[in-house]
Image (cartoon, rainbow over all chains, first blue to last red; front, side, top):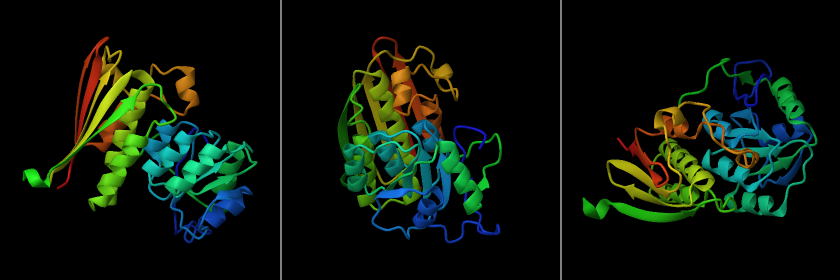
Amino acid sequence: MTGATEPGAADPDRPGGTAGLTLESIRAATGAEAVWCPDTAVPVAGVVAADLMSDVLVDARPGFVLVTGLVNVQVIRTAAIADLAAVVFARGKAVPPEVVDLARQMRVPIFASRESLFGAAGRLYAALGVGPAEPGRRRQA
Amino acid sequence: MKDAEFVRAYEIVGADFTNAGRASTSIKETLKDMGLASALIRRVAIAAFEAEMNTVMYARRATMTLHVTPAEVTIDVRDEGPGIPDIQLAMQEGYSTATAAMREMGFGAGMGLPNIKRNTDELAITSEVQRGTTLVMKVHLN
Protein backbone atom coordinates (compact mmCIF):
# COMPACT_ATOMS: atom_id res chain seq x y z
CA MET A 1 0.00 0.00 0.00
CA THR A 2 1.62 3.23 -1.11
CA GLY A 3 -1.01 5.85 -0.46
CA ALA A 4 -4.17 6.79 1.37
CA THR A 5 -6.28 5.23 -1.33
CA GLU A 6 -5.41 2.01 -3.09
CA PRO A 7 -8.14 0.54 -5.22
CA GLY A 8 -7.58 -3.09 -6.11
CA ALA A 9 -9.69 -4.49 -8.90
CA ALA A 10 -10.85 -8.06 -9.13
CA ASP A 11 -8.50 -10.17 -11.22
CA PRO A 12 -10.13 -13.55 -11.88
CA ASP A 13 -7.17 -14.76 -13.99
CA ARG A 14 -4.66 -14.38 -11.20
CA PRO A 15 -3.92 -17.57 -9.22
CA GLY A 16 -5.79 -17.37 -5.94
CA GLY A 17 -7.49 -14.28 -7.38
CA THR A 18 -10.83 -12.72 -6.69
CA ALA A 19 -13.09 -14.99 -8.69
CA GLY A 20 -15.71 -16.03 -6.16
CA LEU A 21 -14.64 -13.33 -3.69
CA THR A 22 -17.49 -12.64 -1.27
CA LEU A 23 -18.17 -10.61 1.83
CA GLU A 24 -17.36 -13.73 3.86
CA SER A 25 -13.89 -13.81 2.25
CA ILE A 26 -13.40 -10.18 3.27
CA ARG A 27 -14.63 -10.84 6.82
CA ALA A 28 -12.37 -13.86 7.25
CA ALA A 29 -9.26 -12.17 5.84
CA THR A 30 -9.58 -9.16 8.13
CA GLY A 31 -10.70 -11.16 11.18
CA ALA A 32 -13.71 -8.89 11.31
CA GLU A 33 -17.02 -9.14 13.12
CA ALA A 34 -20.17 -8.68 11.06
CA VAL A 35 -21.93 -5.72 12.67
CA TRP A 36 -24.78 -5.78 10.15
CA CYS A 37 -24.70 -8.13 7.18
CA PRO A 38 -27.81 -10.00 6.03
CA ASP A 39 -25.95 -11.99 3.37
CA THR A 40 -22.22 -12.81 3.48
CA ALA A 41 -22.39 -14.56 0.08
CA VAL A 42 -22.64 -11.22 -1.76
CA PRO A 43 -19.89 -11.05 -4.42
CA VAL A 44 -17.14 -8.43 -4.15
CA ALA A 45 -15.54 -6.72 -7.17
CA GLY A 46 -12.50 -5.27 -5.39
CA VAL A 47 -11.26 -3.27 -2.42
CA VAL A 48 -10.50 0.38 -1.73
CA ALA A 49 -8.79 1.61 1.46
CA ALA A 50 -9.18 5.27 2.42
CA ASP A 51 -10.10 7.68 5.18
CA LEU A 52 -11.14 10.47 2.84
CA MET A 53 -14.57 9.84 1.38
CA SER A 54 -13.73 12.33 -1.39
CA ASP A 55 -11.09 9.85 -2.57
CA VAL A 56 -13.51 6.93 -2.31
CA LEU A 57 -15.95 8.74 -4.59
CA VAL A 58 -13.19 9.04 -7.19
CA ASP A 59 -11.54 5.62 -6.92
CA ALA A 60 -14.13 3.01 -5.90
CA ARG A 61 -16.09 1.07 -8.44
CA PRO A 62 -19.49 -0.58 -7.94
CA GLY A 63 -19.25 -3.72 -5.82
CA PHE A 64 -16.02 -2.67 -4.08
CA VAL A 65 -15.54 -3.04 -0.34
CA LEU A 66 -14.31 0.06 1.49
CA VAL A 67 -11.79 -0.44 4.30
CA THR A 68 -11.53 2.68 6.44
CA GLY A 69 -10.47 4.04 9.80
CA LEU A 70 -13.16 6.72 9.66
CA VAL A 71 -16.35 5.86 11.56
CA ASN A 72 -19.31 8.16 10.95
CA VAL A 73 -22.60 8.32 9.06
CA GLN A 74 -20.98 9.92 6.04
CA VAL A 75 -19.05 6.70 5.40
CA ILE A 76 -22.37 4.87 5.05
CA ARG A 77 -23.85 7.55 2.81
CA THR A 78 -20.74 7.49 0.62
CA ALA A 79 -20.89 3.69 0.34
CA ALA A 80 -24.57 3.82 -0.65
CA ILE A 81 -24.08 6.59 -3.21
CA ALA A 82 -21.10 4.76 -4.80
CA ASP A 83 -22.85 1.33 -4.90
CA LEU A 84 -20.22 -0.29 -2.66
CA ALA A 85 -20.69 -3.89 -1.48
CA ALA A 86 -19.77 -3.23 2.17
CA VAL A 87 -17.65 -1.25 4.62
CA VAL A 88 -14.97 -2.67 6.92
CA PHE A 89 -14.21 -0.33 9.84
CA ALA A 90 -10.59 -0.89 10.84
CA ARG A 91 -8.55 -0.02 13.93
CA GLY A 92 -10.97 -1.65 16.37
CA LYS A 93 -13.05 1.49 16.67
CA ALA A 94 -16.49 1.19 18.21
CA VAL A 95 -19.28 1.60 15.67
CA PRO A 96 -21.85 4.07 17.07
CA PRO A 97 -25.56 3.08 17.03
CA GLU A 98 -26.48 5.85 14.56
CA VAL A 99 -23.98 4.40 12.07
CA VAL A 100 -25.40 0.89 12.48
CA ASP A 101 -28.96 2.22 12.13
CA LEU A 102 -28.16 4.10 8.93
CA ALA A 103 -26.30 1.08 7.50
CA ARG A 104 -29.35 -1.08 8.12
CA GLN A 105 -31.67 1.55 6.68
CA MET A 106 -29.52 2.02 3.55
CA ARG A 107 -28.73 -1.70 3.33
CA VAL A 108 -24.94 -1.26 3.46
CA PRO A 109 -23.31 -4.29 5.16
CA ILE A 110 -20.74 -3.26 7.79
CA PHE A 111 -17.92 -5.13 9.52
CA ALA A 112 -15.56 -4.19 12.36
CA SER A 113 -11.92 -5.33 12.41
CA ARG A 114 -9.27 -4.86 15.06
CA GLU A 115 -6.62 -4.62 12.33
CA SER A 116 -5.08 -1.25 11.49
CA LEU A 117 -6.08 0.23 8.16
CA PHE A 118 -2.67 -0.73 6.81
CA GLY A 119 -2.95 -4.23 8.28
CA ALA A 120 -6.48 -4.87 7.02
CA ALA A 121 -5.67 -3.61 3.54
CA GLY A 122 -2.42 -5.61 3.50
CA ARG A 123 -4.17 -8.82 4.52
CA LEU A 124 -6.77 -8.34 1.79
CA TYR A 125 -4.06 -7.59 -0.75
CA ALA A 126 -2.04 -10.66 0.19
CA ALA A 127 -4.77 -13.18 0.92
CA LEU A 128 -7.20 -12.32 -1.84
CA GLY A 129 -4.83 -11.62 -4.69
CA VAL A 130 -6.35 -8.35 -5.82
CA GLY A 131 -4.45 -6.44 -8.46
CA PRO A 132 -3.40 -2.87 -7.70
CA ALA A 133 -4.52 0.02 -9.89
CA GLU A 134 -1.95 1.35 -12.33
CA PRO A 135 0.41 3.48 -10.20
CA GLY A 136 -0.07 7.22 -10.34
CA ARG A 137 -3.30 7.14 -12.28
CA ARG A 138 -6.81 7.70 -11.09
CA ARG A 139 -9.65 5.94 -12.76
CA GLN A 140 -11.72 7.91 -15.23
CA ALA A 141 -15.49 7.65 -14.77
CA MET B 1 -43.02 16.59 -23.68
CA LYS B 2 -43.98 18.55 -20.60
CA ASP B 3 -45.81 15.54 -19.18
CA ALA B 4 -42.58 13.58 -19.35
CA GLU B 5 -40.70 16.10 -17.22
CA PHE B 6 -40.01 15.60 -13.53
CA VAL B 7 -38.92 18.33 -11.13
CA ARG B 8 -38.20 18.11 -7.41
CA ALA B 9 -36.41 20.58 -5.14
CA TYR B 10 -34.47 19.88 -1.94
CA GLU B 11 -33.39 22.33 0.75
CA ILE B 12 -29.86 21.87 2.11
CA VAL B 13 -28.68 23.43 5.36
CA GLY B 14 -25.07 24.49 5.83
CA ALA B 15 -22.99 22.74 8.55
CA ASP B 16 -25.69 20.09 9.05
CA PHE B 17 -23.40 17.08 8.73
CA THR B 18 -25.95 14.72 10.28
CA ASN B 19 -28.32 15.10 7.34
CA ALA B 20 -25.70 15.81 4.69
CA GLY B 21 -26.24 13.46 1.78
CA ARG B 22 -29.97 12.90 2.28
CA ALA B 23 -30.96 14.93 -0.78
CA SER B 24 -28.53 13.04 -3.01
CA THR B 25 -29.74 9.73 -1.60
CA SER B 26 -33.33 10.72 -2.39
CA ILE B 27 -32.32 11.76 -5.92
CA LYS B 28 -30.68 8.37 -6.41
CA GLU B 29 -33.81 6.54 -5.24
CA THR B 30 -36.00 8.68 -7.51
CA LEU B 31 -33.88 7.90 -10.56
CA LYS B 32 -33.92 4.19 -9.65
CA ASP B 33 -37.72 4.30 -9.51
CA MET B 34 -37.68 5.83 -13.00
CA GLY B 35 -35.79 2.80 -14.24
CA LEU B 36 -32.68 4.63 -15.50
CA ALA B 37 -29.47 2.64 -16.06
CA SER B 38 -27.53 1.98 -12.84
CA ALA B 39 -24.22 3.32 -14.23
CA LEU B 40 -25.92 6.57 -15.18
CA ILE B 41 -27.67 6.83 -11.81
CA ARG B 42 -24.34 6.34 -10.06
CA ARG B 43 -22.75 9.22 -12.01
CA VAL B 44 -25.63 11.56 -11.16
CA ALA B 45 -25.66 10.45 -7.51
CA ILE B 46 -21.92 11.00 -7.06
CA ALA B 47 -22.06 14.46 -8.69
CA ALA B 48 -25.08 15.42 -6.55
CA PHE B 49 -23.44 14.10 -3.36
CA GLU B 50 -20.20 16.01 -3.99
CA ALA B 51 -22.19 19.20 -4.62
CA GLU B 52 -24.32 18.61 -1.52
CA MET B 53 -21.26 18.07 0.67
CA ASN B 54 -19.67 21.25 -0.72
CA THR B 55 -22.81 23.14 0.25
CA VAL B 56 -22.90 21.67 3.75
CA MET B 57 -19.21 22.45 4.25
CA TYR B 58 -19.06 25.97 2.87
CA ALA B 59 -22.50 27.57 2.38
CA ARG B 60 -25.28 28.76 4.71
CA ARG B 61 -28.01 27.10 2.72
CA ALA B 62 -28.85 25.94 -0.77
CA THR B 63 -31.63 24.68 -2.98
CA MET B 64 -30.82 21.60 -5.03
CA THR B 65 -33.23 20.94 -7.89
CA LEU B 66 -33.54 17.70 -9.83
CA HIS B 67 -34.97 18.07 -13.33
CA VAL B 68 -35.43 14.99 -15.52
CA THR B 69 -36.51 15.03 -19.16
CA PRO B 70 -36.38 12.22 -21.74
CA ALA B 71 -33.07 13.70 -22.94
CA GLU B 72 -31.15 14.49 -19.75
CA VAL B 73 -30.91 14.71 -16.00
CA THR B 74 -30.13 18.20 -14.70
CA ILE B 75 -29.26 19.10 -11.14
CA ASP B 76 -28.76 22.69 -10.19
CA VAL B 77 -27.49 23.80 -6.83
CA ARG B 78 -27.92 27.44 -5.85
CA ASP B 79 -26.29 28.33 -2.56
CA GLU B 80 -26.00 31.36 -0.33
CA GLY B 81 -22.44 31.45 0.89
CA PRO B 82 -18.94 32.82 0.53
CA GLY B 83 -18.68 32.10 -3.21
CA ILE B 84 -15.58 30.88 -5.06
CA PRO B 85 -13.06 33.64 -5.79
CA ASP B 86 -11.12 31.63 -8.40
CA ILE B 87 -13.17 28.89 -10.09
CA GLN B 88 -10.26 27.73 -12.25
CA LEU B 89 -8.16 27.17 -9.13
CA ALA B 90 -11.03 25.36 -7.36
CA MET B 91 -11.31 22.99 -10.34
CA GLN B 92 -7.74 21.77 -9.83
CA GLU B 93 -7.49 18.31 -8.24
CA GLY B 94 -6.19 18.58 -4.69
CA TYR B 95 -6.88 22.30 -4.26
CA SER B 96 -8.90 22.74 -1.09
CA THR B 97 -9.76 25.35 1.50
CA ALA B 98 -11.27 22.74 3.84
CA THR B 99 -10.80 23.04 7.59
CA ALA B 100 -9.53 20.26 9.86
CA ALA B 101 -13.12 19.65 11.02
CA MET B 102 -14.25 19.07 7.43
CA ARG B 103 -11.42 16.62 6.85
CA GLU B 104 -12.32 14.76 10.03
CA MET B 105 -15.71 14.14 8.43
CA GLY B 106 -13.88 12.56 5.49
CA PHE B 107 -14.25 15.42 3.03
CA GLY B 108 -12.26 18.36 1.77
CA ALA B 109 -9.63 16.51 -0.28
CA GLY B 110 -9.93 18.99 -3.11
CA MET B 111 -11.59 16.43 -5.36
CA GLY B 112 -15.20 17.61 -5.23
CA LEU B 113 -15.50 19.91 -8.26
CA PRO B 114 -13.12 17.84 -10.43
CA ASN B 115 -15.12 14.72 -9.55
CA ILE B 116 -18.38 16.47 -10.42
CA LYS B 117 -16.91 17.37 -13.81
CA ARG B 118 -15.73 13.77 -14.30
CA ASN B 119 -19.20 12.37 -13.64
CA THR B 120 -21.25 14.83 -15.69
CA ASP B 121 -21.54 15.63 -19.40
CA GLU B 122 -21.95 19.36 -18.79
CA LEU B 123 -20.99 21.51 -15.82
CA ALA B 124 -21.49 25.26 -15.48
CA ILE B 125 -20.31 27.15 -12.40
CA THR B 126 -21.06 30.77 -11.64
CA SER B 127 -20.09 32.41 -8.39
CA GLU B 128 -20.17 35.77 -6.70
CA VAL B 129 -17.92 36.30 -3.69
CA GLN B 130 -19.87 36.90 -0.46
CA ARG B 131 -23.13 36.05 -2.28
CA GLY B 132 -23.08 32.44 -3.40
CA THR B 133 -22.39 29.83 -6.04
CA THR B 134 -24.56 28.12 -8.64
CA LEU B 135 -23.73 24.77 -10.20
CA VAL B 136 -25.67 23.39 -13.14
CA MET B 137 -24.84 19.74 -13.83
CA LYS B 138 -26.18 17.72 -16.73
CA VAL B 139 -25.98 14.04 -17.61
CA HIS B 140 -27.29 13.05 -21.03
CA LEU B 141 -29.57 10.03 -21.23
CA ASN B 142 -28.73 9.08 -24.80
